[in-house]
Image (cartoon, rainbow, N blue to C red):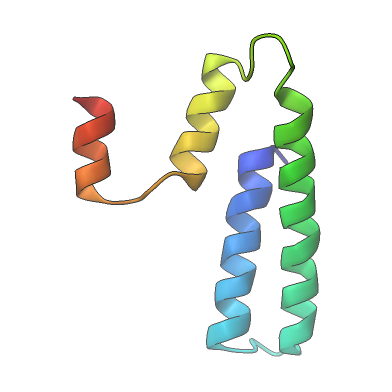
Length: 79
């Protein structure tokens, strides 16, 4: 999985833990979400070198995943 994929899954698991228990204890989904969030952080840290930062493709993937999700943000970022 990529960093953004881990991030998305962590968000989904936390949402599920808060809404329903889908047959699993809520703490199981919370623990799974925490693992994926940690892996997402590790991926973002590893990809962000000290010299030039993230590559354009990696930055766009992170922006699309973790950025503000609203129509107003779409207008601002896409012009």
